[in-house]
Length: 203
View 1: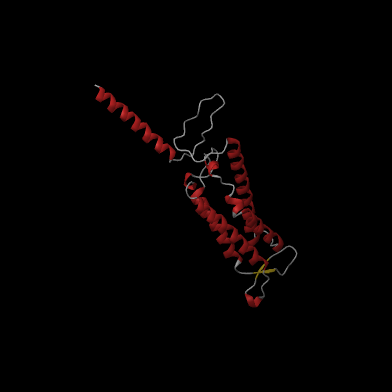
View 2: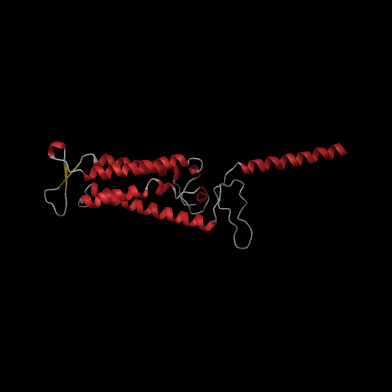
């Protein structure tokens, strides 16, 4: 009888010991905050390093505003470059520089691991453990935007293959480098790649 009790106690210790070890090396992408009446929505088995709910929500809101602003900037720049809007070199360069400034560390620093574990975030669970890939994308976006801005600054001659875009103030058109479209498309492809890997529907 004593032997049977010892086996049962040993089994219980081993079972909960294994459960505890799984808990410590796992991750969860839900929100582990408790509602005001004191009962958790669920107890997270898998939890990344957490920051408090207010800071996570603020970070989610901040990066979503940044993403929305960048999206509008990309669209506006595309309309100018593809001459859907009259071409203005100064505005085009300014928009490219704005994308450059909002990329790189300015983009990746707004994705604290704890912020991933938040409802209303569009960041997919695939982000967790792939932060370096995301950071590489953010830096690539910054470099691509910088390259586009530099290309837009060029004023090529006909011999250099200048392409003329229509403008409100210049009936003959404004000469631009024929490489600006490749530069813009490369920048857009980086955004698309990152969205495909790390952006999903709102939770």
